[in-house]
Structure formats: C-alpha cells, structure tokens
Length: 457
Image (cartoon, rainbow, N blue to C red; front, side, top):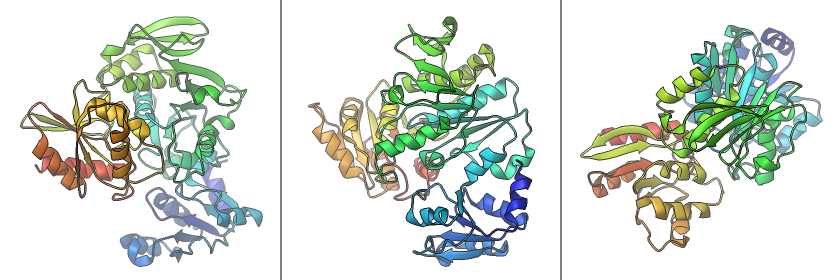
C-alpha cells in the first residue's frame, strides 16, 4: 500500500484530525493538498489557536473547537493526536459505529517503503535513537529520523526509497493501539512514567510492548537485560532477540566486561571498544551506545560504531554544555523529564552540583530521587508543580546531609538564584525530573529558554 492509495481511498470519506499541534499540522496539509475534506477538532478556541487557525482555515479546513471538541466526532476516519488516549469514550464510539481511529504514525508505518527501526523506553531513547541514526549514516545509509524526536515523517514519505532506513523514536502515546511494529525494535528500559495519561503502570508497559507485538518472522528485538521490567515481558515468539547487559554475557547482544564493550553473536564474542573512549559522559551513555550498537548489527561495521562513539558530542538538551561564566559551568538537561533521567544526569559528574528541578506533575513517584539528590547535589533550586514532591523526597531521604534548598518563581528566577549561590568550580544543571507542560510547550522550549537565560547572565 502506498500513500497515494490511502489518499485516494480517503477522497470519498469524511476525515477528522484531532489536534492542531506540531505533529498533526503537516498531516493536515498533506490531506488537504490531496483534496481530502478535513475537520480539525481541538480543545482550544479559534482565538487561542491564533495564527494556526488562520493558516488551517486558508487550507479549507472546517473546525470543531472548545471543550466539547471530541463530542462531535461523526467522521468516517479519525486521526488521533498522541496526547489523546485511544480509549476515550468518544473514540470508542467511533469504532463502535464502524469508523476508523488511526494516527499519523500508524499511517506512516503502513506506507513507509523502507525498513523501520523503532526505539522506545522510559530513559535514554532519544540519545539511543540519535546514536543509531549516526551509526547508520556513518555506514553510508540514507536515514530518515523522526517520530517522537524531530519531525513527522509521513509528509516526506514520497522521498523515501526502499533502500533507505527510517529511524523512529516512539512514545507510549504513539505506540498505544498501533497495529504495526518496526523491523528492528528496541526498549531501553521501563520505569513508572506518564501516569497522568495511563491508568496505571501495567497499561504503560503494555503500550510500550506494542513496539514488537506485530513483528513478523526475521524481525529483531533488542532489550535491556539489566532492567527488571523488560526481563519479565511476554515476548513475540517470532522476534529474533538480542540483549544488552553490564552484568553477564548474552548469547547474542552487546555486553560490558572490565570496562570493555563486546558484541556477542550466537555465543561468539568480539571486542568492540573501551567504554572510556565514548565521548559523551556518564554510565547511562555507555548503556545508550551499547543499545544502539546492538540495534545496528547487520547494518554497520564495528569501525563505524567506534568512530561515532568516539566523536559524537551528544543530543541537544541532554547534559548539553551551555557556557562557563566566572568559573561556573552551566548544563542543559531539559530532556530529563523523569526521576531516573535526572539520576543519570547527576551520576555523570564527579562533584556535587547545583540542581534546578521541578515542572509538570505526571503523577509518578519521586521517592527514588531523594537519596541521589542528597548524594550529588549541594544546592537544590525548585520550581513548578512537582517542587513540593521533590522537596519531600529529599527531606525524607536516609542521608543526614541535605542540600541547601531554594524556591524559585519560574525558570528565569531559578537561573538567577543559581548565579547568586554558585562559586568558581561549581556546576549548575537544569535537570527537572519532570515534564515541561506546566509552563512550556515541550522540553525543547524549556531547554532553549534556559540557555537564553544563562547566556543573558
């Protein structure tokens, strides 16, 4: 099935697109250019959508806006934005009357002419996805990077050839209800996350496992053998399994022994590289390199992997160096939207830090963060909805030594406080352990504003 086949089939159907945000705007444009009638359903009213409303109206869209935007879904085909749970009663009603509920990502999987490599997980998926793409580009492949990282890939599917590769980061939101799985799938780890969206952790895990549920014979699955949740997953029996581990030697996969990374294939091991030669800092990035190396087996030579691992400087917003001012180094780790991500960032430095944390509350536990903060943080600056939870976890930690704590009105105020308390030799890091939606569109906007505020000092 090609994209043109799908668009032709939609000509005699009514189509709804839920959400006029970044991920769906290119989809709406694609549908309208093909002559498909589109109704945009969005919680925001026209004035709140601003210029976006005018642009979509100019394309010829009709609208259903405001609080009841999901109650007017009468269309034949509904494209769901990832932020709307697929089991919403209004979407169940669409299915009950014979309508189709799909998504931009699901349609991309259906029509993409080349193999898809998909990566998901609670932590490390952005760096792992980026490393995977860099390894493959070094090996000479034409790669298309997108999904939960970068841009939607559906609008450029006509430029993708069968011998290209699509590398896609996938969130639980995108995976939930998906009827397709990638040719190569990977799960970095699974810890409680997005419990404001999922009814419980079991639903979150089930959403993630959709990445391999529909794999076919010969498709590959890469898992983290050191993660207690991935160890217990019910696997697709046709998936060809590879493991990443720092605690043993897998039959097939990538492992770490005596600080050296090895690749194992059917019980036979070969040396890849010294972990100390990886340019990006932190034990978690050793794991990310290992996972990406396992993913690209069969596509890349070892020297391609080693070259990139030694030269790759890291992903924007992930322990990204911003500047040094008066002997103080500032780092942007805005992508750290969960406690485990922040813990990995704290472990990347060999000194106590000035930490800026807090943000949108995803209703996940923060107790695990208290002791790492006491161990690795000298000054804790809190802002946002999760500030009380992080403070409580820190105060409840067993450690007798607690960091100095400050409350900030907002991110700019947090940067100001950090500047005031920092001494030469200190490291200031924004690593929120929380999502950004309380005050920002996404973690990229939050990170960019942090860099702006730091550079204005």
